[in-house]
Picture 1 (cartoon, one colour):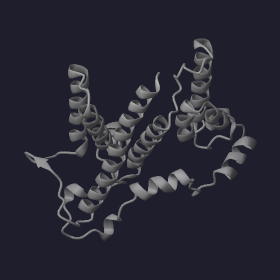
Picture 2 (tube, one colour; picture 1 turned 45 degrees about the vertical axis):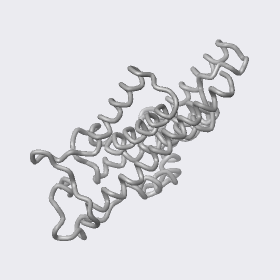
Picture 3 (spheres, helix red, strand yellow; picture 1 turned 90 degrees about the vertical axis):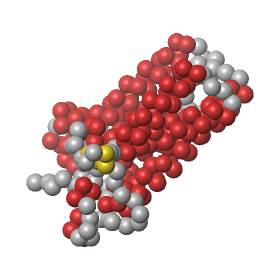
Picture 4 (cartoon, one colour; picture 1 turned 60 degrees about the horizontal axis):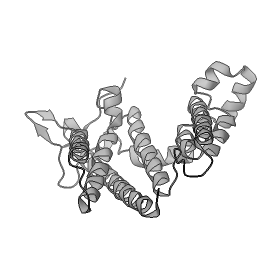
Length: 248
């Protein structure tokens, strides 16, 4: 891949990532304002049915994908499509928990998975922007060496996921040594790996390492976006459609 093509790819990824992050931040700010009854924003309803913002995201993804494959535009239109794709991806992934659980859990505990999905996508976009590419065969090592490296990296990433370290696993797909370190480290006690493979002594070590109530930096970052004003303190005029479903 020549330098011009590589630079152009980075520009497109930059447009995509920038639009993705800005849309996510704006969306979280607006949805919190709606929930707390602040500002001019209101939920959208058509025929009495609440239209979630993932609907707009899905249509944007379909539209940009169709335009790219059907018309293959060049020049500034490619940048526009890249930015619109980032907007659509953010709107869709911001409600990842809703289409995962098939119910409105946006502000519930399960809704944290939406923020996880968005932040992981942001990590992937950042790695692509800085040039990390697990399938880059221009290093001169040959296709066999690249295939072995990718296979080992993916295997370590799977182990890392089983050990309850999905963030390091995602990064490890692009930087295999990160996946290797995550695969060798102690698993979280709630992970599949720990529940199935750890004896009582090793499980005790994991419980000491990941004590109840201990939040990692990633958890605190997710909380920053996922935690909303408690329901009991919401204004009395708050619309029922903005409230999360009651939990037992």
